[in-house]
Amino acid sequence: MIGRLFSALPSRKGRRLRRFRTFSRSKRRVVITGVGIVSPIGIGKEIFWKNLVEGKTGIDRISLFDASSFPSQIAGEVRDFEPRAFLNEKQISYYSRATQFAFAAARLAKADAGIKCFDPMRTDVVIGAGASSFEFVDEQVFRNPYAGRAYVAGTFDPRGIAKYSINLPACAIAFAEQIRGYTVTLSTACASGLTAIGTAMERITSGLSDVAIAGAADCAVNHFTLNLFSAADFLNTQNDCPDTALCPFDRRHTKSVLAEGAGIFVFEELAHALDRGAPIYAELSEFSQQYENQNEFFGMDKSGKRWSETILAVTKNGKILPEYVNAHGTSDRQMDIIETSALMHAFGERAAQIPVSSIKGNIGSPFGAAGALQLATAALAIHKKELPPNYNYRMPDPECNLRLDSFRPRTKIKNALVNSHGFGGVNASLFVRELVA
Image (tube, rainbow, N blue to C red; front, side):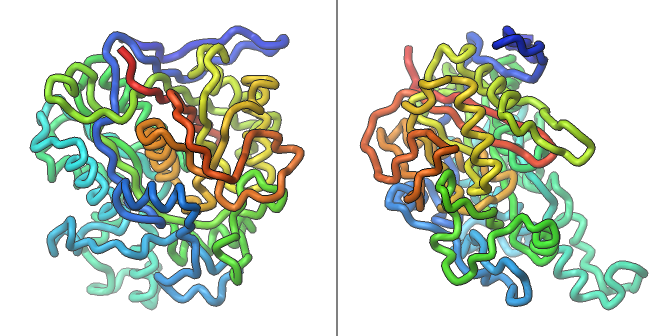
């Protein structure tokens, strides 16, 4: 198969070799021709980008339900979503919120790419998702006094299977676009978006498809998820100041904030895109991911060395210095420091030269959708020749000694590195670049 599925990097400073999944660009090249976004700071790429570079946040008090009894009462909600702009009444009744977001983002990406119809056997649908649609579980538990412990006819919605199933976003998109080929849902927690994109990239470079509708969607703002993350003490409780609740890489590190959204793309083989005169945002160059779990409690490698190996894999063993890094950057102190360490291990002192920012301060943590929205940010930064700021960065942390300027530098960049990390131990990195001959 064209491309490296497994590779081992040379040992650095005596470290033992490790093998991990790496997808590389070969003779068949993959480009981004359509971008569809549903996010807490806007629906559609233009409003998303405008609010991002102007330093606006979508984090606010939870409005989808009464969260007054929870320690954390803030989230990154998609507040202006109107499903009827994208779906008919039957689809709305059967599709979960995550499926509706994915469907809408796919429609936006298709329109952006200027494609009227897809080749049913040469188009893939690859969608990432971190969790199932637990807002539906909320609804059913509230309706059923037995909370699912006993069967009572008529208490559960028979459409629930469609709403609960994690694979429905991919299936809904495939059905709507009459695609009969490879359709799959992938889950690696918060790395799901990049995992899906990397898989779509490999399918195209391998010659198995020419086009892919790929990305991720997730909706983490519901009673069930809020209960789980509150119990684990993972969430930010600065309820009175939601607009400044998250400050990635800042000395005031807080904890995470739940969010929701979708980022879906149209990816095409370069010749296919050029033949139809498609708009091209950027080229997907390299993708890699590695499993780094160190114990049965899913403890990540706190040194950042394993994550650095993934970064090295997509930057030709560190020979290519990214001109921008869109970081995982959750605003969790430990995670921010580990990601800083990963970049320092990969690039040494040169890491301090690279502009770094995170969009989590703007949108929160939308689980599997995060990596897809990060790629959208990186691709738009290359396309628009402008870098988004690191929202709410004010007090430098000496343990995060990266270039984290909070101002908006107007800088033309030719490439970018996107980082994601998922609970359970999967780290992922994607290198995207300006299209060159």
